[in-house]
Image (cartoon, rainbow, N blue to C red; front, top):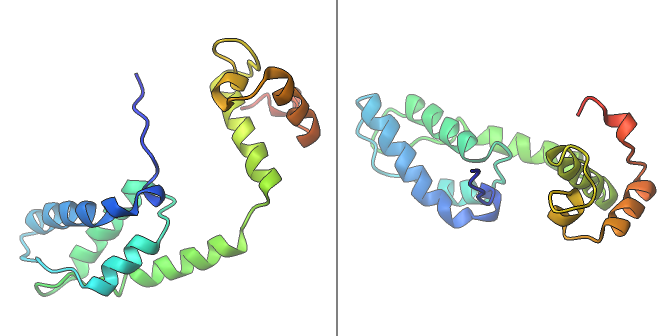
Length: 149
């Protein structure tokens, strides 16, 4: 059975714990003694949304450990990537309708395009099946347009 967890961007308070875990893991693996993370770097990590979730954070810490030469984790060479990614995210801001459309499509994919019933998309989304059908019409969502999904 699947285990659902909130994305990392919705639980930034977990980032320091995960950073310390990955730091210890990769420092031990690479035979390095790294035991400090600059406060400013940790704050920047906590502000980033991590679209790649925990794996992205893990990869970022691994790269930082590889590049670090002293006892303090050197994030400045990997943090510019965070700035560029955040700038790209701002440019690709989506409208509410697009977010809603994508959310409905994901629910339909997961239910194999079943709209109503116990295992239907309407139930997953917390909507009346007639309301969902109306939103699908309004947003131009048709099953035949998404047969490959």
